[in-house]
Image (cartoon, rainbow, N blue to C red; front, side, top):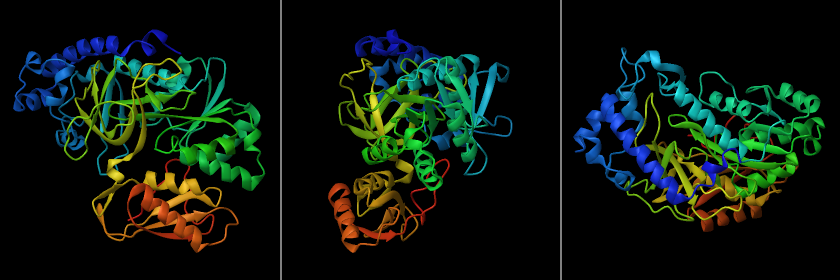
Length: 433
């Protein structure tokens, strides 16, 4: 463990410390953040005393990403939640700006150090240790993933940054530099198994013993994990972050029983019903939308931020000794489709289709018949066969029945030859409208 005192601290002790941090953070928001001073006053909380402690957090309003965007102006492109003077900022990351103007994520020196600490805890859980060599495939440009790369320095690793979209360079680095670990998206890790097979590269017996995946759901899906571990001949663990809150907030240990909260002491996690917004009890097997709150953030702290990540959580002790909350991401609420009242996550479809390996490649594509979230059954799903696989209506029927039994919706399954569906060197698109 990187910080045993923090990572093994009892839940009760951590809760007491988090409560004190939360009260200070709320006082800070009301004093420094125009956005939250107004938002909380409208909700009836004009002072920090009126807010109280963490036991009353469910009474406070949520923060939606569009609210932050709406508060941005030409004079303040970051947003009204900015709580420090511009000269206090040492880093400003941005989102991809797929909806237009990018969203900016500012950090003070303390914020940046907290992010690196969080990422280092999360990645160290995977078992990587000082003196090992790790190859990374994330670009350190404008996006927050770049901050996670500093965690490898903090851990004492020899870091070989390759970046996105450099497969030849990546595989050359693996062949010549013999790293013990690589970090990438699960989609890219899956693609590289096929790339290596087509070129006679013996990936299974390479020097790589740990594959750290992040950036999208998938690394925790049993079928996907099994395929990756077989193809790489390595243990697969996953990590997860949220750009507006922190990079690599969660990291999975070698027990592979969900990702531990590496941001312990920096971030408070809640689980809510995504439809009603009601708080859900944190207990083993509980599922809902993840909501996060900064506890010790300076530049632009967020309160009850709706991540739109649908997760399953565990609170029972992990054999590794870490006491923090664990979770696995099931899918993005933004990607969810509703088929006759049933919530369907594309990643959950992929997980079930993956149980038919090796008859299928594991690649899928959901093709909704109409625009919008609500869909009428059967939902069209393209399933790619394994290399040299032959179309088999019996296989399509079995997949359809297993989807109906597991996810309670009707699908129209189309089997296509291996290589039909597009591969990705970063994140896979599972839905095409």
